[in-house]
Image (cartoon, rainbow, N blue to C red; front, side, top):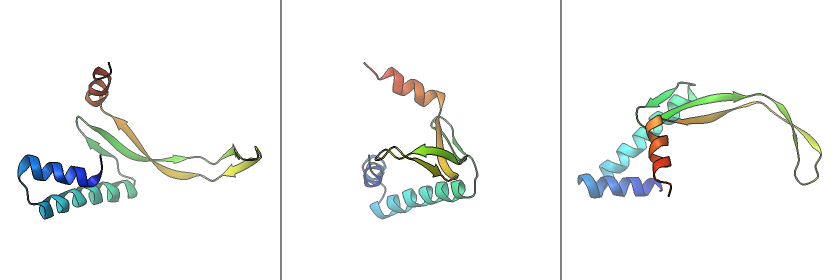
Length: 94
């Protein structure tokens, strides 16, 4: 699902004007991005939580020539799904 699909679902299910739905989705995404950038933890009950985690520098291997390379430390986004979301996904496996 893409961002435009979310916007179209809001328009079709709730009758919201498309411009207002786009603004709402953009505002929510901007708020999430700003919070993650500020190293805040975001928790959405029933969905999951987002946070940024620091990955330590480490030694890796270049897959092309198998030579060791140094990988710098960096922050990455981490998502932990809620128990409800995990159960929903696992119950739909047939």
